[in-house]
Length: 251
Image (cartoon, rainbow, N blue to C red):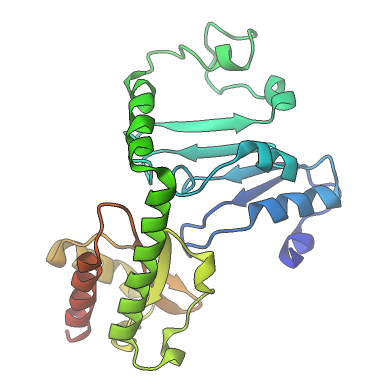
């Protein structure tokens, strides 16, 4: 909150909050930050960028609205496994009249939902698939999915930190574990701490030589690998990553 107060002023019109950061894989307390924004000025509007939120988070829009969130945007392909091209915009009920799409449809002037319908030659096959996908995740149980992700992520981070770092001081976590999930950062071994010029080199070698897709991130002048956990992952995937990184460290 202290950082928020440094940058948000009473004349601020809009505050945009990340729910989960891409570069550092941190989950922000958007409820607390939204409330804090409204304390500065109750007329400030709060928009949450929830690109990593659908399925990965237990979204309660009534609760978010009560905390001061006015707008929430997300997409489905990252965690909910929707086809690419699906996203959603949630708007507080008393603000829908102020929101208009950039593409004008024949519903222009007919209200929030109508204005977003039949825009040009849009392909509606993707949104039409969403009810079936929701049934798919309901069959698994979304809370069970998130529990599996959380458990596996912690096991994977334990494994990689133990394999790559002999002393806890070498781990250099960017934040406590509770701020991660279902993504996390693990610091690469010292032999691969070669600066920003090696971010793409390491990531490309993981992909092309070991068939591993895992972003390499530079944070506080240290290189980290960002790992993710989903229901199709097992601990063996991270053992494979650990071995691949060790091999890269030797070359």
